Image (cartoon, rainbow, N blue to C red; front, side, top):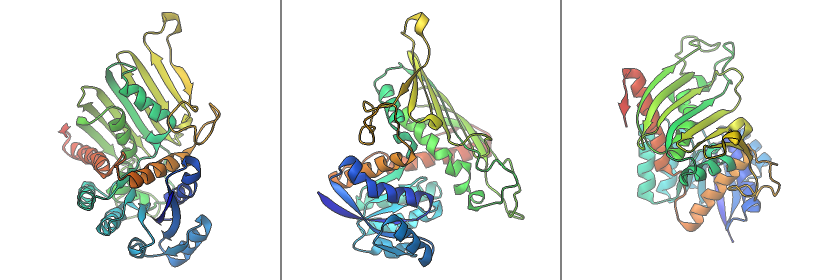
Length: 366
């Protein structure tokens, strides 16, 4: 059993989640590599020290360059805003250090292409954080689809809808400016990733994107970004689909939902009930046909390390711990683990195509 020094850039929402995950993953999964919380980076010396003490890091810094260059930091986790991802990743790869980057992979497609090029040139382990697809229920859904349990997939409907910006009187924040921070840059990548993971590559799409609240308190004179978006698509396997995204969906808190229809059945999932998967089998007796609720338990992927009781459930933080396990396993075995930077770039390629489709009012081939 070896140790690996972890440096995390960002101490806020996701920085805390990754810090807690790295502190817990060895005990949960008995990993061959045990993380050592070496350094955390924040925007000021005072906040870095606060996070250092709260999360248990050995050191803190206000300069991500110091963190990346430190020899005791052997792997880097990027949990800072999208526009910072590229520079941090390129610097880490130049020093031969593995990188885990929160989604999206950079601020745009150009960033993600550059990050993929840097990862390939360095031959370092790289991984992108799409945590929601790692729930035991969604992993089970992927297994059912891969095994052909619902036959040939004909239709996919997915959405990622929340209401954190549904109040028009809410003051503007960093989320309201720049394409990378709008709904298509923030929420859409999660559901696009789910569609690619569950169904496969997207061949073509037709998108529509809108800003519902064009003005907000504190945004006077500035252009605010998109609130909602949607697109129709055709997957390369022939299945049709519809994906929608919103941060102004009143009443929705974690509306990451999908439904997959096949020739022999169907699957439904809702992240607000993340420990259940709904399965319909067309070959059930006529009087028993209907969606059955399957509660996750020890028989489902990555559930048992957290809990021995069926139906007791896993939570949001557990998804991040599963990601940490996969990242450490990839480093230990020197074997890439999905989703790599290439997979993250494919998500950005779909998002870029959606923007192009909206601008042109036409279908776009990928």
